[in-house]
Length: 241
Image (tube, rainbow, N blue to C red):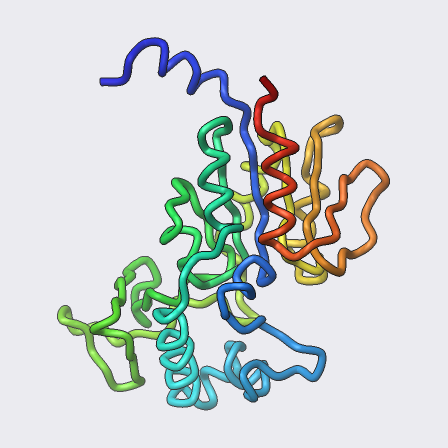
């Protein structure tokens, strides 16, 4: 049982909500989701990241995400991920991420909400609520593969042309934020890009990106990569003695 004083300080913590994009994982060696030429790891994005692409060629899509998992297990969280964990000493930190990797969790973040799915999970084709956690020994899926309970699966990824099931919960988190931070995103992918519009008036907003998009005058922009930008943010947000 927590000490009463510890419970008091936990109650007093401000709610810090993070919205992270590909830029926070790029410095760990995770390739960005989309480039200007519409390719991801030399695959046309719509062939491997859309509902139509999966229906047309599920074997290609399974193979693509098997490759992404093999890449992911070789990567490690970087200091930007770790800085978010450090901020939990002083804030009630909630992470909303567009990334499908598990680097936030592996760094130790307590609360992570994935908008676009999770690479290290598979989902039943017949029961969307049934998820399977994959690991380094069981990375691969295929169209004909059946899990131990007989279910065939697909990648647990929100494809283009599919709804984003966690967006409503993300909006709730942002509306409750006392501080809101955007890290490593161009603010071009919706609905995630619209989360900044859900912040309550007067709430401090920080935006970390080496090539930041144009934002409102009230946003504190840190035009740095995620690792360097998070070092600056920690200095700005940690309690002053």
